[in-house]
Length: 64
Length: 241
Image (cartoon, rainbow over all chains, first blue to last red; front, side, top):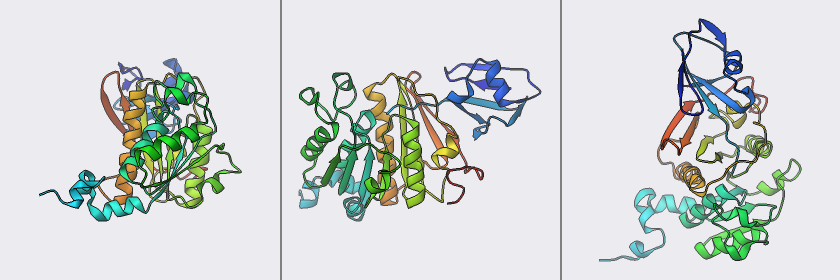
């Protein structure tokens, strides 16, 4: 699985099937601060992701 | 030969949207929530484009630390109400339109009154709780909401059309923690300009709207990306609309 992180870096993780929320916590990312796209679509963090998936973690900005 | 049309204020954009499109902009009343960094870009370009009625709302006063990005306000405006300062700038930019500037807080009990008569909502807020109020009011009144937000060199934008697209809460089910964010004028320029472009497209029926997509700007890498977002059938904000 490839994960694109908010800092622009990409990480490859050998994960069979995992809950996205758990992956975020493993990466030290607070799920409240981000949304996650799986294969280009925003999904709830309860969703599972597996080895063929590409995740993009987007840090939510709130300023104006 | 130069015609009256060529010499008019809007001649260069009439080439894009036609006289009919320009007339539609003139007939449109916009509500701009906030006269800060995004609100500056949004209101200036909407005034210049000839949106016929602009209502801009902000409860704050201009501070010196606002001036790196809030181009509606100038050095002499420090200490004035942002709404008052915005009114003066916008009238200077385009005296042919109606501008109303209100020193008010956007709250649950004031939002419907503040939105009265508006055709669309521009999100230029700096926090998610107020954005959710705008989202709920947009859904309730069936008005499009043009979302934008920034932090530092990054920004995001999305167009929300009730009944046709994911709402703000489908995209962001919960508010991120409120923090003091770094703010840079040119980032407001990028995102605010996208919001205005979307509003003009919506009104004139031009192009393809940024609906069901979240556009992401990263100034560090000078790149744009987008992710697809869909209506969440379980969304507590829009499930009944």
